[in-house]
Length: 312
Ligand code: ADP
Image (cartoon, rainbow, N blue to C red; front, top):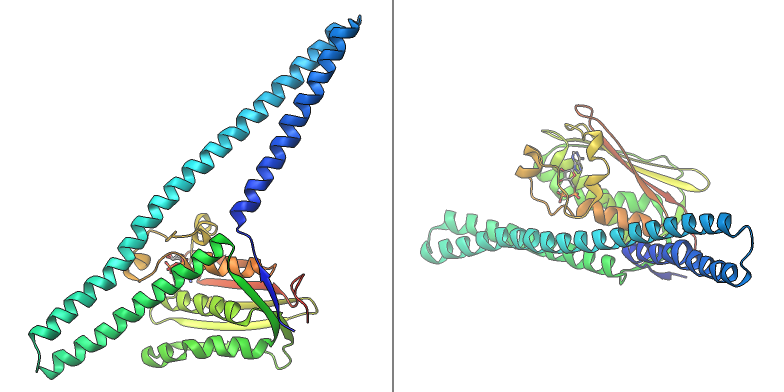
């Protein structure tokens, strides 16, 4: 029986943690300290001076904690503002590029009607650019749903081998067109898993398309999957230029693209890996990256066979 599993955004989890910290570290100690202070005033005990010293120290540390937390709040707000502005400018730029091409090819078509070769080339380009636009919009909508916590994951039993084969199959037209090496290594006895099939399949396709874009010229891609009693590991390996250690975390941030020649030449929104990570976390898994300059990259999705909360 498929189960629906709505997920909340990670931002709201972080927000709740800060509020809890604020209550535990600032409000509770302040109330306790004020009560002790009042008691001391009333009793006027001989050890009052020592107690008062402790009181002042504790009070000071509570205030410092409060100030640090407020600073974290303010920084987060400012960062969110920056990200939103960045988001708007990157998205507008990404949308404008295919739109400009579509406009130019439409003009060419209307001006050079009757020239078969130009008509064919323009129609090909229009198909490609409108698909690019569609992919980008789909990806943005998907991301929007994930960020707002409205993305619903339909967990249902699925044969692992079929899921990986389908992801590779979705990538096959591109492989045939460009003719590069794509090896698939799947052991015979892969188990059934309880996942959102479409979401995990898209995540694997995302990794494949990155391996194609950044994995060397011509790319040599290897996909493999293995499973033990609890866990499944799906790896996509390329022999491209690799990724520096300092970038390993950052490339999973939304809209982040390494500022190198490859990323500038290749189309992309910087959302692919952020989406992969979201999907994997929604399945209580994680992504591992093994990569170093000149040594290719291996991205591995590590997922429990049955995520907690998903029923068979
Ligand atoms: P996009 O591909 O749309 O730019 P991603 O989030 O999928 O966005 O990837 C972020 C960045 O990580 C890419 O722009 C690229 O610089 C880097 N990257 C991703 N996959 C690879 C890879 N297999 N090899 C080298 N760099 C990669």
